[in-house]
Length: 134
Image 1: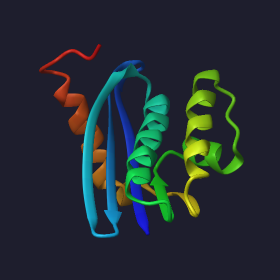
Image 2 (image 1 turned 135 degrees about the horizontal axis):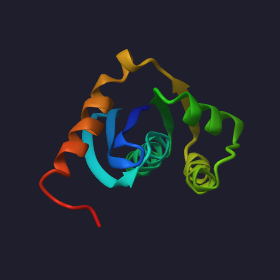
Image 3 (image 1 turned 90 degrees about the horizontal axis):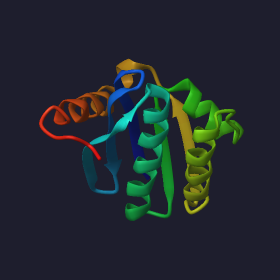
Image 4 (image 1 turned 30 degrees about the vertical axis):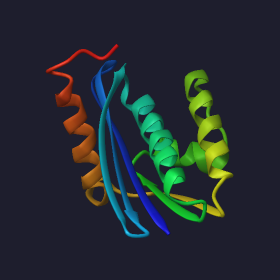
């Protein structure tokens, strides 16, 4: 089983943004910190889950348990619905990848249980100080 922890962060609305992905399980422990184009926090959260699922799909087609501290993202995935047009595109891709797994679960967790992904997302924002995202 793969445990996937994801978080998105933005310094502004929109502002410099980054995603953090922490994957553990099946002999793996992967930490990814990626700057993304300036956006808002909600969009960064969707991008983080999408990227995390892409990475999990490289490791398994079995069981994936995703965890996010974004109630909006977890609710969107659980209900397979979101109002925001931009987020609909991300949700569609997320649900498509979820179908590739034998079992896929998503759970909301408090910030205190998502510290690794949060630190990686914040680190990604600071990486942008040295370079410009295009």
